[in-house]
Length: 329
Image 1 (cartoon, helix red, strand yellow):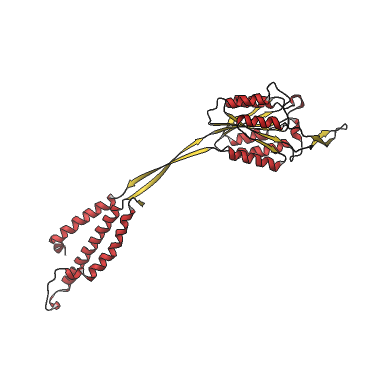
Image 2: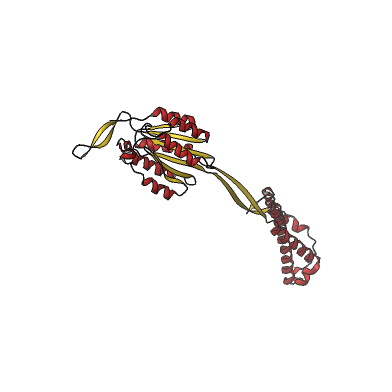
């Protein structure tokens, strides 16, 4: 319970003052009858007189208390909230070409990318996410959904593409993503594209695809994965054994930067697991769902709980003061 006009409660401080005033002055101002000898008055009369006096004092104080509380407007409050959430549609576009087997990330680039993608997915409750994979061609791994368990399951299922379909078709991956997002009614549509190479497959140039994405208000964050210089890469030697060789890292940073710039996104470079994790954490911070919360306060007024008893008490003591009290006692 709360009070709508709590300043009236300061009048409660007057109650002790009234009681003190009565005992010091008030009781001497009441009409009295003088007797030469109190022994002539029965004890029952004296007791009844004191009781009557006490009842009237307490009654008046109770009425004043009830009136003060009623003026302070006691009420019960109930808060209701209306939440409006602006959903973001996000597509995680992950390179699954054979170069993602490079071990400059642990255990390799693809597994590191899957790990950060899963962490990102878990932190995006409420948003719709989907997964696109690409190598020489682009495929939908998981359509847009809010089901985090399904997204995690499909993320775990991403594997390196077979040699027949190997390559890096960044432009086609963007085009496939645009096709999935262009009819979305979400206020924000975002692509997070991770690749470790340069576009060497597909009929569509990455920059052309980016220009198309910009027309549909789709923002693209690009992530270049790979150390600078040489990276350890597993190969099979002439005897069928798997050995590690150093291979040159070939990431087309310029194209990825241009894609991000055209669409209003950002470019990031990740050279190891830790930097890749930080990249996705930063993107997660940049692309947050806007939540608008409107609070409504509902009040139930309770002043009648005090005014009605005060009115009945006033009537009761008026009746008693007119002589009925004597009949009761």
